[in-house]
Image (cartoon, rainbow, N blue to C red; front, side, top):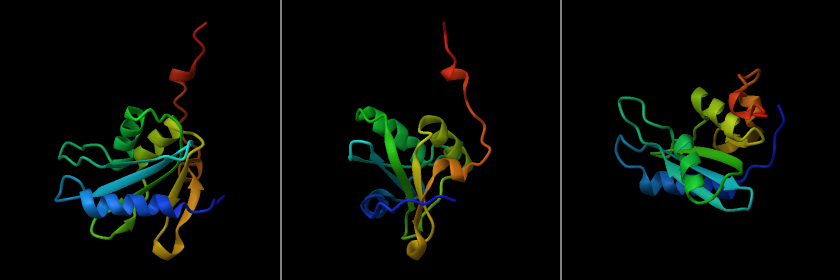
Length: 135
């Protein structure tokens, strides 16, 4: 598994949002992503009994609303000082589809590491329908 340096500023940004914006059962996880231009975009999940989007999925929309379409690194942090939370399977697939070169911070406090999203979803499904040539 290939690793990259951990973006501690990004982890701190997500942890700050988790501490200050996650309240109750509706918002329990915060995410932060580093855009290719260096900006940091943040979000929280929107839990609902019907499923609701994870913080990483909300982050994709939040980034686009700010004109950010290229993300370099992403991390999610749980509320109540739970620390870094790895993306669920659905988020791994969506993140891979949107940003195939994305890096993801995973691991526990003393052992954080940054890995390519492809390492988190080996032999993944490739959503190619939207990439077909339309000649």
